[in-house]
Length: 527
Image 1 (cartoon, rainbow, N blue to C red):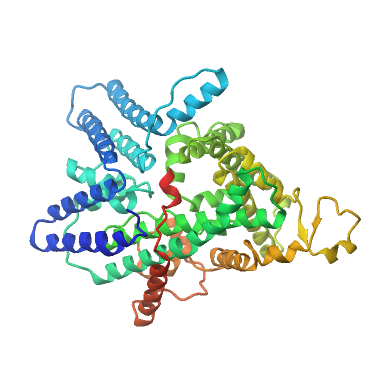
Image 2: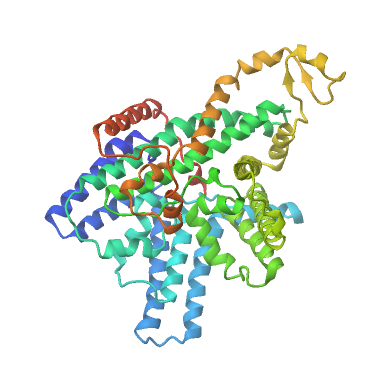
């Protein structure tokens, strides 16, 4: 069941919502949470009921290990500190073992067979939905259990903390202190119309991003990447069109899901962490990763980068740790060499970014004070182009497809221009291809309408406020560094609980319904 399906919008969500609030009125609130847990399991098992068994086993394993860590630390249980640490490591290895088996077994076996000439049999494995997300979330829980940072709770609260359907499938990766205390300490205070209105608005905005914007971009991006995989030469304009189309497809796809997760949480009275905050406005790769998949960035930093030494072992130690962290981050997204290369590219970007900051700090004369706007927009454009190039390998199925598209983006497969322009250039025009097909191209499969759509989304991503800036007057769930950024002067009005905004939201919802006839999965469902 997708958030962007009729079954979810018109059946699952209203039924779950009204029964949840009905139970809250007449029974102890804990029964409402049990209903929410049951609905979340039904939501998860909609695609493939067998996945529920794997999820349930993971929940039972982690809660049992966490209970052992809790008793060893607080109840003066007989475990020694060393044995207690071993129990924590055992829990982490168990989680990573489950993830590795389902997600990476065939990838590694295939590479061994290719490298060694062996014929080890591959398993017919179905990747359990959201296994990367609920595995990382529970590893964080075990770490906090080990460090005595988790409040008292029972198994039913733990289950809902992990399987709460708004965040279960594609994040955010919720740490225990971001949701579990809300569940344990929650007292029913009646239906709050203002909270429901804010949550519904955020949900519809996210639904619009996914159905109307992201899915339309997919129609432009997919044929270009498919053509690249088929050994076809892709000319300059088409290559950049396909790369930019995917750049905005994944942007509005993930932004839409992140909005819907927060909005759904608010509709049920819970605050989930913000996971996406205008990353294409970033003026450096460091800043980009502060606003793209925020919870994953924090997880990799706290559970991988810092334990490896972070920046505590000198400049080169920092660079090494950055590269390793980003490579593993790429592998987390998918079992494929293209994802690893994507992670390596971002690792290189971060190394260069940190090195340049170090040079500017050492040589103060490089910190030019004049032309601030020119410097800021140049940095934003350079960061954006670097991200676009990396997305090529993230989307490509093979190295060949990715490099073919990059060659087209570099103009190595020709640039379509009107025939009359050839007289202004040297004979032959190098790698340029002059053809009357230029006009057919701009009126054809990837023509001016597609480019106007891409440019419109570019303007939205760079100049419009994001959902949480738009709703900032009615939200109190942004972390401090997001709150500081949101305090910058705004040129656009904020959302208000008024009829005009309700009418606008209704128009957006109607437009969504007209495009929702064939729901597509979110890109991060793959990971």
